[in-house]
Image (tube, rainbow, N blue to C red; front, top):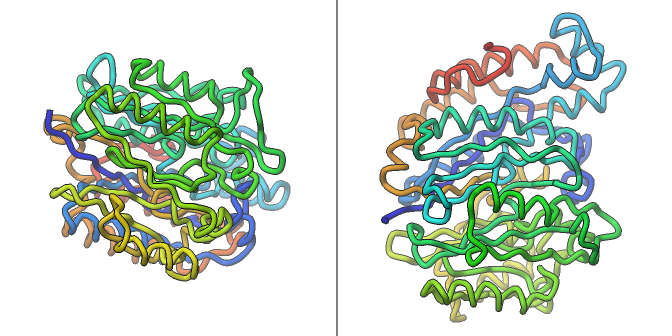
Length: 446
């Protein structure tokens, strides 16, 4: 059945700030306590969405989550009216207020793992929101994420939205940032590629400096929930050494599209065996697998982490040509820029490189791939999606003006204590639910 891949990008929320909450994410920690610009961050992401939509790609919008999360602060013992809760948390536990205020849900690659209907046993598109159990500021997201997904993909005859896996490190799940789907055509049965950092119970190598956030056990659980066949799944371990170099998710060292995997030569444990497994399973489906491997002699792991070369989007145009979407930082790293410039003279599946300014997101550790959730949809499924979330000229104009009305252009971590920020954020989200037709998806609306 004819199908296309849609990208649903997260709108950056009004509380976008640099609190440095993510140990293992080099950019996040290196910019800790600096001043952010939420308005610029939101507009940079919005412009990326609009430009890709203008190029003919299917582009949707996912809303920010409610931040600060008053529910989290109440769950840890703060009482009083909402403004008092924020004030008390700022005085007594600023680290918890920072977690409750994080706008990290902007990185919707972590929102869920998605399997298209061509792959699943019941012929529906399956979503499993990620439990993000490794980090407090992210572990509070999945319930709200599920409500947002249910408001956008509401037709239960076509979409199945699971609950997150139990929130334990043994089942640590970071969503689509560790998942890629390969197929000759989007609408054909594919091979789903799950990458994990460690096995909780199976032993094997583990990183020593930074934590491995995704477990094999979680990846296998998601595959079972989605009804995926054994012959259509491959599980691979991420190299512990690259995790220790700051590759906290697989999408910082690899990206795939259709039958192409673009990755660093040090991305996986027993890398050529991984290629062989993908090649064999795709070959059984009549598809020819291609691995475009970048050697360390040309781009080091450190270059990949600082530039986010692989935290890119690899997209197919209608004519089949593949486009690589990279952040501006790739042009500012001499070795990465030289590699990208050389692509035209090599026989590679990448036909074009597009560069975007996503500076505000990048400083917090998220590039183009972090900002989007890929959802393969056939014609009927696409028609069943909430129509108001599709990017077009009208929605872009509305959201651009909405950002101007509600977002600050300066926000330091200390500003999270300002009770006015809570009111500003709620006013913004309340208006957004009307713009996007989301109903009452936020706790303060209930």
